[in-house]
Amino acid sequence: MNSTINPQSAIRNQFWEGNGVQASTELETKEKQIDKKIEPQELGTHPVIHLSHIHKVYHMGDIEVHALRGITLTVNKGEFVAIMGASGSGKSTTMNIIGCLDRPTRGHYILDGRDVSELSKDERADIRNSKIGFVFQGFNLLPRTSALENVELPMLYSDVSTTERHKRAMDALIAVGLVGREHSHPNQLSGGQQQRVAIARALVNQPALILADEPTGNLDSRTSVEVMEIFQKLNREQGITLILITHEHDIAEYASRVVIFKDGKIKSDYRVTERRDASEELKLLPTITDDDDDDEDD
Image (cartoon, rainbow, N blue to C red):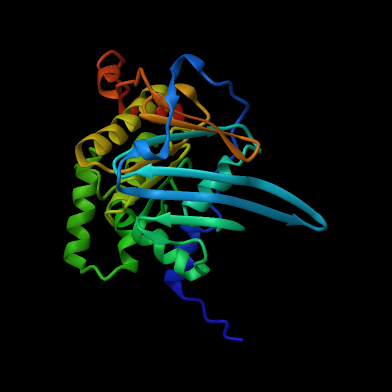
């Protein structure tokens, strides 16, 4: 057996393997937000994601656990969708399938025009790197690496020159408001700044989709709004497709559409009729300085 370890595969696995979606706490649906159920034909003609009759069965000894029971979901280019659901609802399994961290037992998953349902582990890794930008609750930055180098990391697996890699990383850092912090290491950045680096890293390969797993879970209230402002700006100004997983109703209200899972099925799928505007809310919130952030982290 060849015991040689490919360094790029080792780094890639550190980020993309084992970063399953975390379970959320129990929640109640805000019925007043529900406008009408979203039908697939209403969503336009360019789906980035199409899940068709997806089943997922886990085998635990002689026991079969049905995590997903035939769900169908379409997300079009430029949509901003929040996914919610209690622990055991199937939300986490769905997110793992969407992120190509797992594949369905039955059914088809079309990502940006390609059926990825039956791809091998290595093929899914390539798809993750080229088609999906990930933002996790825990940031997942390399601690001994600068912000710029962290953002450049996904491009190491692509045929991108050093000059182009540097330019794209700088452009991404500018887009998330981190000009002047490109040479800072994670321990020199606040939690909010680290999450901005993670968002910039998700942008550099110009993915078809950004998948954000509880991105505000480790942040204070104002910083959470700042992160949502970035997401709304990317969605509104650049037309980036976003899927956000959250257990917080107030965070879901920044999206334009909410999908709620229960018992392995989609319980409801509705548009947010009173969408929150992060930019307007920030004008009314007190500013938290970097020194304040450092004090809170201590």
